Length: 89
Image (cartoon, rainbow, N blue to C red; front, side):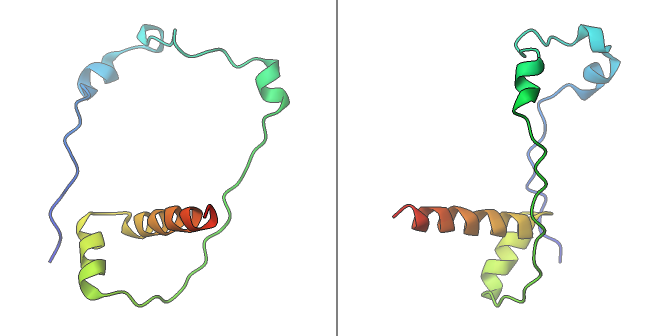
């Protein structure tokens, strides 16, 4: 049984956005990226994830799966926040 779709409907007018040209998009609040920005910029690749076998309560796993695609990423994010909170103690 699939979980219900919990994604909220977007408030973006996608059809109007698709009709816009690049020149019609307001970017006045975005500062230009000059040489000073790139002087200290660095490409940082994410560390690869490790596959593990983890035993979770079935109702817990079902709840995460009901939230939709990306449930493993959400579990990872929650564990990361907990780890960071414990480190700052």
